Length: 373
Image (cartoon, rainbow, N blue to C red; front, side, top):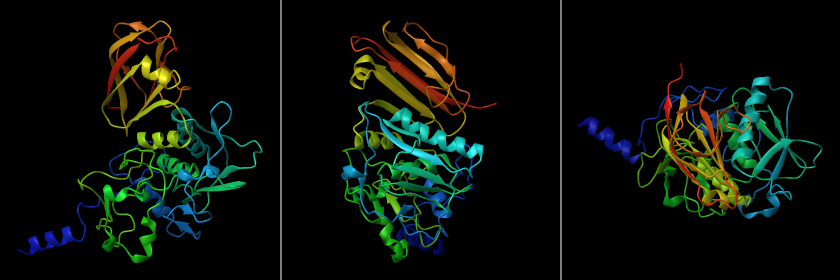
């Protein structure tokens, strides 16, 4: 009887799911089920930060939302590329610099935003190992500090989280329509933290609410106790929220919508999945489609089930997350079978290039994860 009373009380107070014990991997991009989410890393790193922050990691200098503020956006050049100059402080190790650059390089691959080396531009990001993980919203004038403390903020997803703030995005749970998708359990947090859950007036770009966004708080954010939920998805409270691996596919769609990027890009984060391409969709997106497969761990095995590519078009598969990665399949045209392709790590990039006068090329493929030995 007493156990039934306890169970009933847990439901009333929002303790829907038990809180896992997290042991984060700080460096490297190997993810495990026991790793902390992006926001948990940020919240822990910012516990003693003496900077006025909103929502735990947003610098409180300018209150605006780049989703509705054109002057907050970074400039697009005549080639349709949005350039964001940045510098990395010399205090970082070579490994940390490599991780920062790798996380920022994904924007260039999957959006029309490129983080480029600073060359005396008046507005730029200065990535510094300050106190905690935090940044400003959108572009501000002059030198713009991005704090990535070492080693606590040296996480692939955390770096991309702060970069998305710099591009003009608040946290996903502050969307205007959030109450249709989540319940905020105010009773499970201190009133002093209510402001972290304010709704921000902004454009949703008609994109779906994204529980898997790298910008989403985790289930227990600002909870009075570790076991009390403050955010519960609906209608299914068991839906996972918050993650650590990096930007979701919808995150990339938001960036491309916000900056008017007409690109054919898809990011696949599940451990198994499929993809297909056609010359029609490729030509609608500039003649070039990219699929970034990024699994939590292990290697990726890709198998083409159908291939019919015109001589003017081709498919290339890279062993990594960028076009500078080693090539697993180089400019494949025609038809026929292709042996299974296996990556050497957790990223694989598939590129499909089609000429405007080609309208008949198609392919389908699927992937699974395989153990690393």
